[in-house]
Image 1 (spheres, rainbow, N blue to C red):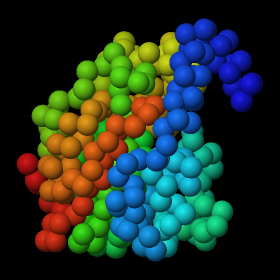
Image 2: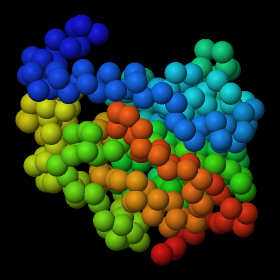
Image 3: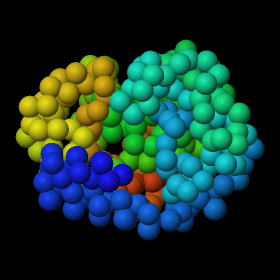
Length: 275
């Protein structure tokens, strides 16, 4: 930990170090989401899939601690190597809790899961994933399709004011709908000029200097580090409504989380032409 703080100070200076220490302190103080206890029955002993896990937010000490109570949990990751997990091996290899058997690890695009069977999971988890996806509505329709009737989706996204996105505007819902109807793919770099101009590197010490950040960003299809879109609680709620799910809970949680719990209604069906 000391070594990491030294690296942050060397790359981002006192402002970056101060932000990192404050964010860590707020994270330790955050505690459990208010909505977890009321909704834990949706996960206890149930079978689910996570997108882009494992995630600290779902551990026993996280803000929405579902890992210790689930019956079975699979995972889907975009590639065999990720910035966050290193090498990822497909198969029965998803270790999310030391007291639980490993789940299935799948390698697939989060917005291209059409080959997964419909109505196959009781819940879907996605912590700090949707902002990295170029076509979030397509992804949400796909995740909703995986759920059984009455199944639950848990979304956790960054609250922009508390992150390196704080200079960027919240993405318009109309833009996300246009991306969906235009079938935008995950190699899209439409937002790169905005990101390079407004990304606050003092709040993102791992990104390096401006040249290193630009180089990494141009390779986004390989690393998926970019926040393609910027969200607030209203936009996330509008997205959930657009795909036809009902909202069970919306919270903002320290240090920088937006949490939404949504439920699939009986009779909901995926539609690639929804508008």
